[in-house]
Length: 127
Image (cartoon, rainbow, N blue to C red; front, side):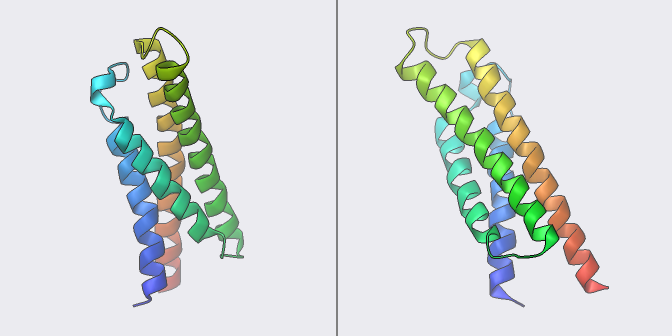
């Protein structure tokens, strides 16, 4: 067993599960979505992105692209949340929460794509 591959897969799957945990719930209800879980999803997603920089294959480039998309969407969701909380006087309205969760949903789709590609590559290597 290769420890480097275990760590690589661990962070890819952890990024997916944390993002899913944040995404799950009523889309416009801030009580169902934790800012700490969004922060954890961003941190783990950034770690997964850094780990993907070493792969020089075509599949590695696609994995990196999916990770960059997830990072961009999660960071944008965090910026929207911060602006809503600290800049505007309205706070987290259902409309703003819907935007944040929708951005997280896009990142979730990118993470699912990344995990599917990882599993496909693992199956191809076995044969």
